[in-house]
Image (cartoon, rainbow, N blue to C red; front, side):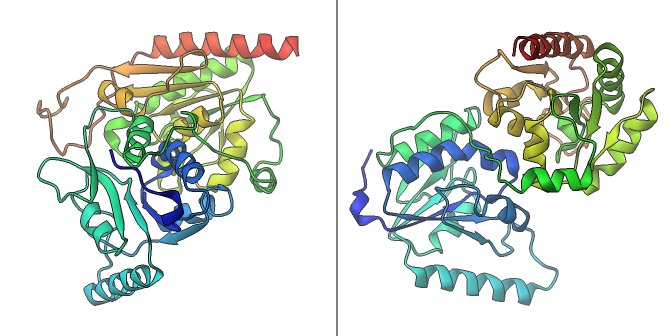
Length: 359
């Protein structure tokens, strides 16, 4: 391990162009990096839809820059000439800025390490799997490792000590206002968030199970149920409404990420697939029940169990083709038991009600 002199590092750039959950996993490492290099400006390279959420919310991120289309990281435009021109202009501007340190927190490094090398930084740090181009300082990428620990170990390669394992999801003053513009009847603590979507269909629990959870919460605990998701996931909310016996509040496609922070903070419980909203609940310390494929619990699972309950599916082979690795868009978490989820609902909502009564 080679330490870098904090006085020699004035500009740091970090590539983490993924989704909400992926970003949250990296916040302990970003926070530690800022503490170790207090005089450095940290630039975060992200996807377009993450920039409004990150910008101004995290005191240890000083600049946000949207990356151009790039193979394997951000889908290129159909116009290849425009894609190439935008990439060239982006890398030229990065090289002119003169970064002292570029860090690849994006993944195994197949596409992302060549990307980082083109930034022109004096020093580079990142992950690399077998056969992947290595950076100046490299940590071997191992799939089955907690994402939070992975990036803390990565920055530890240059002498950055941890400042804690907690993920950060701060709320800004305007977040609740935007939430109430969409849902004016919101009453803190009197609703449960149900999130039936996930970008990967293999991580989606059957909608009928979420509908059963929704009906149970309303009948047993008299709590409203709020369904969340992106605009592209609205069909999942409509399917849930058809399967459920009792009505739900459908907020799919209506909340930005800041308003989502406000919603989750004010909920009594979150029931979700393994996706960004689940990790947001953990970051803001809101009780949650999350459906995991068994392997993903290792990389994306919470560290504690008092208020955060994973429910696992042990399916290892594709239910359709029987292969261990395939392209079938079928759920690998369908066997996660509904009864176990309902038992956790009882535990967490009963505990939450008891705590509220004491207060």
